[in-house]
Length: 174
Length: 123
Image (cartoon, rainbow over all chains, first blue to last red):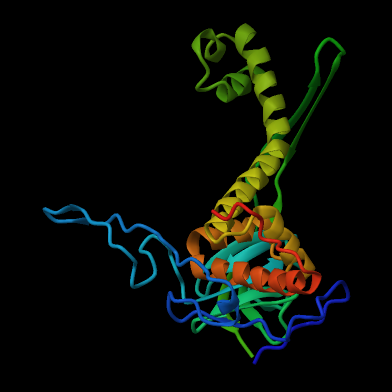
């Protein structure tokens, strides 16, 4: 079971420990049986040959437009929060890491794997994301031009943001 | 030369603003100033968009945006609005899990304080 980092800030003491929420099927199970949660009423607008648009009453599987991946992590890195999946590369502000080296991302705020979505308060303890640093690159040049009409003031600079591209190899849970 | 650079930047403008340097120069200057300003405004606009999306998705589950964000903040879940809106769009069940977590917490606090927090207007 994944442990939660106890936050130094406000934590509700009435909540039992452990946030993992099992959603293996569209029917909601778990502690929110107190409140009747409305099931998702999404419409399937896939066109059948010769039949027009078919809209089923209640979807038996996750709706088709939701690109529901089975394993992802929400990571905080470079001043941004990212939604990472294995096998994809991402670009963030420059990291202190050599291109070609392996890095481990430890500020993980949420993880979904095997049908369970676990969210950390604010970070998860035993979850790390391993990645390869692919390259250091510079972003496209943006022109910074400042200008004040009738006041004899204009200033022009260019800027290219240093970025790092990294490839996520593994999302390690527990 | 400076003139060629300006006419290069003036591609796509309307009428003489893209061809004649005397009309293109102030047009390009204005365009660059707007670009500077709007790079900052884009960040504000995106956040507005994320909030609208989170609000719509939360109301589908019977929670208002304000209550959802308050609940997440109290629970110290620091997922930001950008990722929340992406969850709401592409991972509806994970988003529903977060909403249920907030509802559970608010049900707990409401039961103890004796008031109903979910609001009279449940969608």
